[in-house]
Length: 174
Image (cartoon, rainbow, N blue to C red; front, side, top):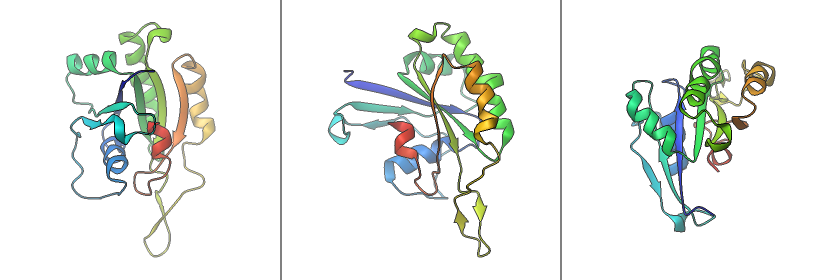
């Protein structure tokens, strides 16, 4: 078993990558003080269930390509985040992010594990302005199916989550 695992979080700007990382670490959602790109987060082995040291690497669309390529090559796992209410962020996984991974790491057997994370399942509000979990987000399983079929050798799993409600975050990162 590996003693140190690096997880890279990728996706379009504004999908909640840094929010997911901050909420995972603090187990609390904050609408303020979320950095545009979170500094690398190191979780010591004694703080994890499996006794593995974990480093979580954040990214941005504005990350220089050389740095992004280096992070992709170093990663043991990649979490591709999209916003379930913004179809273009899901389309960009198929049209940009997954082809980029395929270009940088052409051998799927030697590539990191790729997880899709549909973030922001908390987008619906009730009459009082409070958020509720949306049972039927616009990007349904049918919307993701073509992506999963096209990149089946690359994508290991897909989860829906919410940084705001701390829903599904541990499953995404575990």
